[in-house]
Length: 444
Image 1 (cartoon, helix red, strand yellow):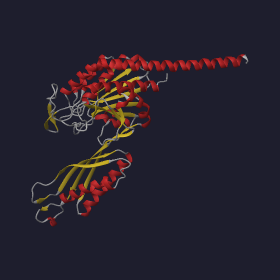
Image 2 (cartoon, helix red, strand yellow):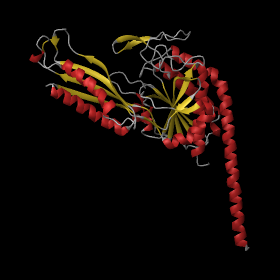
Image 3 (tube, rainbow, N blue to C red):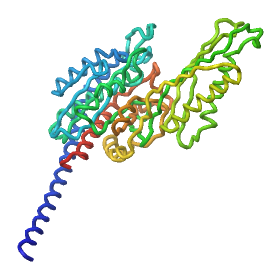
Image 4 (cartoon, rainbow, N blue to C red):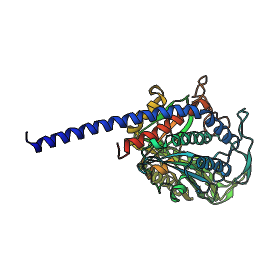
């Protein structure tokens, strides 16, 4: 072996050993970080519960989360983060920079409550009342957003303590108006994105969770579509007013509306390939007429359209319009149809989901993690997922002595969160952020 060959061989060996050593050091660093996250999660658990109870007792509706935002912004500032406020009205963003500027990962929690009067007997139950759509209503965190915020604040606390172990940046997004903005206002994830929440710095992935009735501390997820697109439907059927005793003297929009309602159910039950994905068309309101013996001029109906496949979403919209128009024309009536595009399908990026599944299992325990069926509920987390890959999962919060299948659902005045599940959410989101940064950092 000549000297040149010897040097080349020696260099290759040295580089190989350095690579092995670097991988070993990174693996060790990652394991140390996981241990630190678990330790810090236990330490912050009681504070997370305290935050959750405070948010629960003083809920605020969408685009009006003033007190909530102030508490969050103050704490993120105390942690030493770069804090941005008044995004999409009341949104708060915290930026935590670790060892490097990139990669960047985002974590999101929603902030708003619902116009629901609480019926749960708790010392911190909501007594708040406010005006919603011109009516006085009770206000309650009946969908668990109080838990989401408290969990993410716990994650912020933990990751700040280990910031110099993080090979990248974490962006904490506290979003208002997930349940929808007040009439005449913009809001929610769409306005957050419009106002640049996914820029400066730009995350390459986003994670979020939702508490639901389920086995305590369990994690449910699904690659692909996990929650439905939700679109609004508004129909006006125009007939011709006449005496109720002489219907032939006009065009009865009530009878036409009844035919439309029944026919719309055949769109999903007879016209769609339901092996692709389920779909739902529901008429929720119908209004027409003022007196029993008068056939009115018109009837108004509103409803919701839920789909789990983007192509099917477009197809369903076309079939709905064709069905309504043809039925109305057959009776001599006319219609105005308005389909309001709502939130898209909450779509878990398959590659990202596969990559992060081991993290879910490690954080919650493999026996507590499962792939679940999709739900026809909707979430505007999907708006972020249209821009960057995302993973959204569910956290079970039903007490161990109760059957979660019989527990009050989200949006119920009896909705209840067993707070012992919150630490699982804290550990899971913390580990997802840390693992993602390690997997995608340029020192890996």
